Length: 288
Image 1 (cartoon, one colour):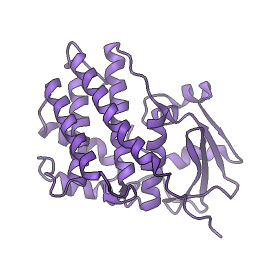
Image 2 (spheres, one colour; image 1 turned 90 degrees about the vertical axis):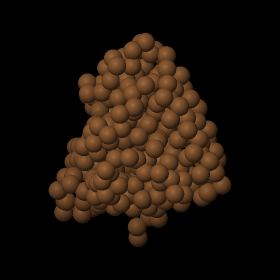
Image 3 (cartoon, one colour; image 1 turned 135 degrees about the vertical axis):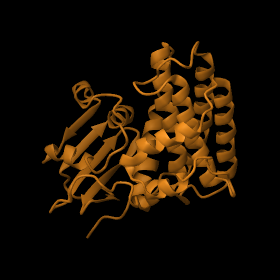
């Protein structure tokens, strides 16, 4: 008998996620407006201003998905591309959106972020955190996961900017934990659609990965026939991952190398078939 899907997290997380989103957005805005030159690089591909514009686009998308009649991004064909995309297409979606969305003034971007986050929080106030929205590739993301995703974007890209600016940017493990639990597990629970299409080839037997951390409830992810589902732990897993959520998320997004994270012991891999984790991650992946 297959174990049931993990139950949604306690309702208190909804209020905490909402508070964390607003606090992180305000911190991001202060950081952005403090850098001497936002045209300086934040990553190999984006300036600090480009990075902030990307986060503003993510916030705008969240607004369009949560505010009744919310205006879509002024990017021709983006809605259709979003529905047909998978995770490997996100880089191209970002390129197209940044080419059309030309605002790069730090103060204007900070104001825009503030307005969009306020709109999202107002539109989702009093709603069921497990209510879903239609995300990229038809993935069904619960509202709590959508807000956790936006908070994670602000956190990771704030880290990019702060690192290059030499500014402090403490990372709260709560943010990464809720991203894993409410966004990754949330869309797995509600339906990933075609978001993970195009990954590794389906295998004859499933791969089971059990995830543990001090900040999340344990969960087993099962990859079978190219699809991923979530279960309450019960079966003996192929791979057991014990992690600091921040280290795991940074590793998944390519901000930390797998070697350095594993050597630091902030992510530990065990189980009866640990060598299957890279095979699993070829399907269950994020843009990096």
